[in-house]
Image (cartoon, rainbow, N blue to C red; front, side, top):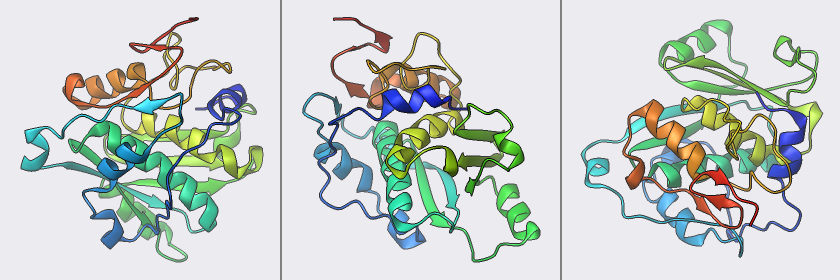
Amino acid sequence: MLPLRLVASLVISGLTLLVAAIVLSFTPARAANSNASRDYGRNYDTSTYRYTDKPAPAAASAGTRTLTVYVDRDFDPAERDRIGLALQQWNHVLNGLVRFRASLLPPDPTDRTLAQIRRSGAWIVAKVDSRHPAARERAALAMTVGGRGGGFVYVIADRFGTRDLTAVMLHELGHVLGAGHDPHGHLMAPVYDRNNGHCIDRGAVAMVASAQHLPLSQLNWCVGPGLDDGRYSSR
């Protein structure tokens, strides 16, 4: 669940992603590109904040765990790009040990189709508005419902603009991976101010590593001012 004040800090004024063309069509063929997260890690640069870029561990070549994400067709191309950017960042962080694979939902899916997707262990990113039951908490911008067997990420799209969508999805994908809220953290804190929440910090990665049983030392995370081993620093 993402409070309104979280996005205000996540979308930092002047924060620029120097990625030449991030266009994620959400087709299985594109998702199969195993180099996507490595390329993203090298190109990511905000001048102030950057991701580490560790060599992929040997265990990654032995078999990557895949989490399939189906994206609602109601998201327009610009919104899909924003969701794709969040998925790319997490894939870089996970360093080949776990990987998100994205695809568009089938056109006009039936309840039976959605049930089959859920039974497969996949996640569905659904675009809803404030009338949806998932929007019952007025401050929420998104809601993640589910567990290891898959679930839904409900994006309450009428409560924020497209430019905020990557920030919302970074937080919610942390929940998908098993991270909870951390009152001392950055990305996964219940409430952020403008001094933190720039990207996927070490504290968020540590929670995911614990939930997914991954070696923290072999994962990547964001470094920069105010980020000190996943704890807030006022320096």
